[in-house]
Image (cartoon, rainbow, N blue to C red; front, side):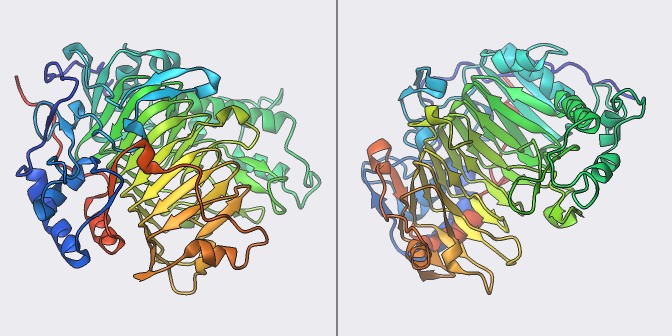
Length: 527
């Protein structure tokens, strides 16, 4: 069986200027996307300006070909590019593309950090550019050395670009062996019995209908579950440090079975990747979680913890081989092996999430981890634009403390069973939702699109529901015991410039441009 080699430095593109050139309007990306965008614009009419003329994510450059330049003479949504046009590794976020393009102070965990627009690994030296196609190669590249530890990766601030080619599976040992949950469980003995841990034994022992009842799990079996979970985390959880770009090449780049955790870092870019099936072998039973109890998983596909200036773009998030409808029901509740798809918590700040797909999942995006984390006041500033959410249950997003802007997103339900809400107003949050398109399945209640979880306000405008203008906040307030104020404590145009697509154009534009594989992408061009 092949032992994966250490990641080898690949060809780099040379120094990247502080402000690289703008992609010409006649490039291949424009030709690829101009037709659907032109059709959408033709149906909807002229773009609507908000604040000053704006720059945003690269896919919108195609709109320039359809409607011409912005009023200030710049491209409608220009994007800095360096090196080969289809090489995404040297790209940086465009000026004004949401909170991740903002400059100024941020205070994760009450420690001041001076933020600059996100550039990721654009300044990487030739020796810090990697091409990887195995889990071990990815881990080594992020650590900066062969066999590096999680802390090596977490605290490594050397600028790096990591190109992912093909499908990478985190359930793979360093020698290439495919791992299973039993491989982790078999390494743990239950107490002094000498018997290996088994989730089947755990379920039988803590069944609330049996002698154990509705008490929290404790004792040798719970202790063994925690040990088995730690073994899995050591293998399938991977930290990402500062000044890093991880980018997929082509339309099949994928990281599955992993929890990719950007923790305590700054200046990170994740693009053109499918993040799939962050699978927890050993979820915990919590009988006190709601009136019926719940199984709680430890892993998101991607987690941002105490991290700032992060751009997540043109990626796809899903449950892979373990979709929600494939999970068994245990103790009357879904045996949940996933947590979030992309969670932004623990004081993370200045994040732009653009042109992504979030597919067939329950708890999709949590912004802010706990009502008790008062140190997160002033943090959790996030921009969500041109994302596609299909058949998700909730949290698109749910927000605590943050100033969050959600515009030109497309929310689509094809079935009623999983849907709970989209926009969750949590403690001390201030959401601004503009020109979003919502399509609910027949029988879904529009009043459920908004949810309140300790919040007091939510500003909504320009929404289309099933193709027609709708005030979904008013629908929620009509039956709410404590209505939400239709206002926000901040204005996005005071923080950055942006343009809104007319909402009627959003479904066509977003379905044509969001997700992994929609951007041309290659390895660096030969020198």
